[in-house]
Length: 178
Image (tube, rainbow, N blue to C red):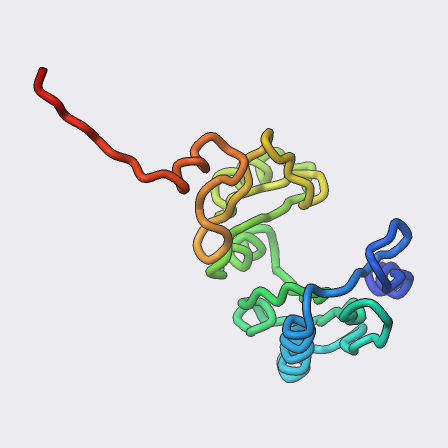
């Protein structure tokens, strides 16, 4: 209920300081997101949003929330890249970790916990390139905090880290007799 209440208060509009939900990147992405939402209505309960918003200067979609999402559904297994939240219930921490790791994506994950045991377990077993513990899951610091994911998320390289430059180089080994 709290998520629904906060979502209903988000302002939709251009990327200004007081705007909670800005436009999506293009008409093609707008259409793709709306298609994903339409498909999702056959998989889970649409509890908020789901519609295009007609505003000047961009392609807008209401913040959309699906409840009772199956971990194996398209909603859970596909990157939508839009204002869509899929709520998946887990029986316990072990189940939550299995659900989180049960996708082909692994860019970013987050854990809020006071249990040091769970935190250590997430650090060890949560298969993501960037794990945020007890903080928001956005805001990697460029040049300070390497950023990149695993599997189908990102390039498996850490952008901003010292090894990232090697992606743009052709390494050559030379052996010369002197």
